[in-house]
Length: 408
Image (cartoon, rainbow, N blue to C red; front, top):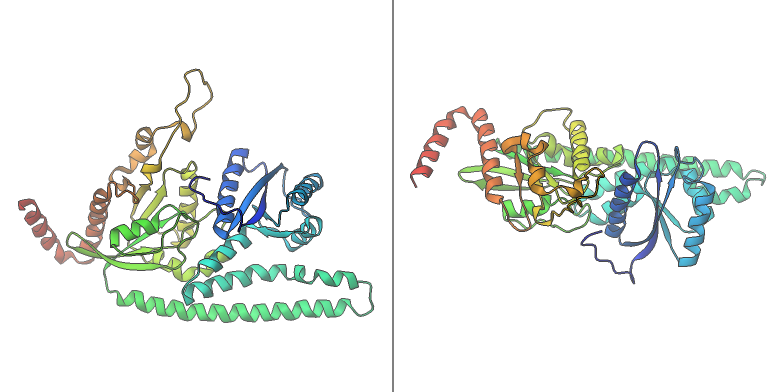
């Protein structure tokens, strides 16, 4: 992965495991594994090897086939690997069987994301949201915690206490989930009051895939110091700043990034964060155009926004960020294979489907400050339209201000 600096001495050593199914191509699986490796790096692990198997569907017992699992075990034992991370969610049965075979720590994609969320959460709101997501993830996997009772399965009276303990734990977790949901409802009420107290200022929300540069852009537009880092989920807490572009004040919100295969209960846990998107007047969709799969990332974000905003059609500006990091490889003249995204220059991409967006597509580099004035101008025009619809009597003031600007 580009720009990935790894301390191999202090990092946990891991292997990644994924399947190629009829629903996805080998190249897509490699892209998913690139992202999984970045997630592992964000959590503090170093990836030593990837294992990929082609199957019609995941094995219900061990996710991969018996032969592939033996291959993974041989590599793990020979190279002192302490963890295996699987690109899909695993059932409690699968985790127990794989752990029994490999004798190392087993994580799936969701548990890895939850670990990152737990590390990143700073405020009470984010910590409560993460804790709720963790309990919701744990609940259907409780039986895995009691596999040690399998040794006593034949003993008289031993099966009952095991089941009783599981039921007790299930009730405890359900009570904890109910308590955390109640806490989040109170937080939602407080957030709703805060949003109400902000008055009728135009609300602009930065949305996009994780690690596309939203926080860097937030710092640039608001002259603030929001935490930004080249790691996934650097921002979990929603940050709201008041900014003024020309004569127009507005509220700018930085939100948590989206990602592929994000489980529903994680989205539900971050409801109060996503409320900022629901109540926004204008969405600024930030895209990392230097990423080879940026179009798939756009689809993921659009699908999530359709769920979050209940299909509401909000005005949107597409901001293609990181043009300074964009690169392509021209095809050789004798290469007759179809071109891929990696073979297309930025100028040609701008003339593709993006050209149909007109002024609602802006190409920038937040890191280098390229085309930021053009982006501000577009945000101002959109926000001005929203403001005038909300306060029609201000139309004259805007015209007068524009006339003065032209005279100056």
